Structures are given as C-alpha cells and as structure tokens.
Length: 245
Image 1: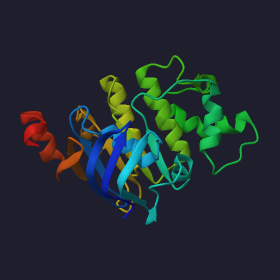
Image 2 (image 1 turned 180 degrees about the vertical axis):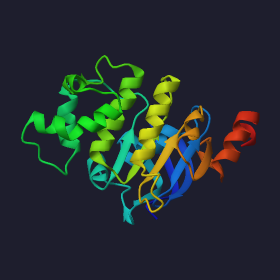
Image 3 (image 1 turned 90 degrees about the vertical axis):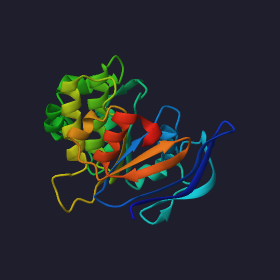
C-alpha cells in the first residue's frame, strides 16, 4: 500500500475536523475526494503534508510502509509526496526558474540556459514560454497560469504520489482540458503498469472526463461516508447532492 491512513483524527485550533478517516491508496490508483465545503477535504490534504497547524490527535499515516505521522513537511516531500494547492501564495523575489532548479533534484544545472533547455518542452506543453520562467512565482499570474505553473513544478519534481486540490477551480474550459491532460501525464495513466498515484479534490467533476479515476470517496462531517465507483458516485452527487451520496 502506497498511502495508508488509519483512524485519523485531526484538530485545527482546538476544533476537531477529521473524526476517524480511513483511506488506502495503492500504486497506480487515482482517487477522487468529494464533499461539501467544510467537510474536511483540505484538512486531510494538509495533514498528509504535515502542516503544523493541523494537529493529529489520533491515528496514523503511513507512506511506502513508513510511519510519517510526525515527520516534518520537507521530509515527506523528499519521500515522494507532491501537491498542487487551490490558492498557492505568490512568492515575491523568487523566480519560477529558480524554484524549478530546487524541485528537480535529479539534475545539477550549471546555467540558466541549461535549465531553460531542460524544461522548454514541458513549458511549451503548458503554454508557458521561456519569459514566463523569469517571473516571480505566482505574482500577477492569472488563475490558469497559476494552475499550469504548479503542474510545471510537479513535472520537474516527479513525485510518486500527488494530491490535487481543486485543479479545475477558477479556470476556463480550455485550461481545464490542458491541465487534465498534464495531470494524466503526471500520473502516467497511459501506462498500464504505472506506479504513480494521486488523490484529487474536485467540486465540478468536469475534470473526470479527462482524468481516469479508479476510486471515489465522499467526505462528510470529517468522516468518509461512502467509497465506490467514481462515475456512479459523481452521478448521485449531481442528482441528489451529498446527502444521498
């Protein structure tokens, strides 16, 4: 099992948000997490990442068989965790090209030209030209540019397990289709023997036309209330809302 969450309970500023979450994600699987606002979806993401604001009061998180419940965020990232945030912050004074150098640990770049050559194809696929790499991270970016920039960083990082926090929010249909294609590439979904896995939060569900999900879960009031076929669960949510999901 790549990611295993057992009886996870989490508090944020003294308020219990997660109330016993159990979740297993194996290699090659893509899971979708659905639920109303305030159900605890983002809290689950942040807890898996190890953000200190999110206090684990019970339960364990295992990744690649290792207990990571008490590891620092940077230690988890080094083990192969990746994430795209719904609203990532702008980082003034840090150019996107410099962030890409840090994230791509497989190469030691000797010059900006070498970095540009390395990521040229990836950037072009995401409609991010070389001038874009000179800009401060997320500063003045449009919604679509932010999403594409985050995916470019993940393509450089190449994590084994990726969490996507509403990648289809705040972008137009054209960008959703482009983003979806690159998510499928990140998860190596064209490879039947892919070992890449993902967990995706979505409200709209449109992205599931392009990203093949293997499992779906409904999170309500801090607990997973249903697990099953993504298409069936998404249809029930569209028809009846989360009450009957």
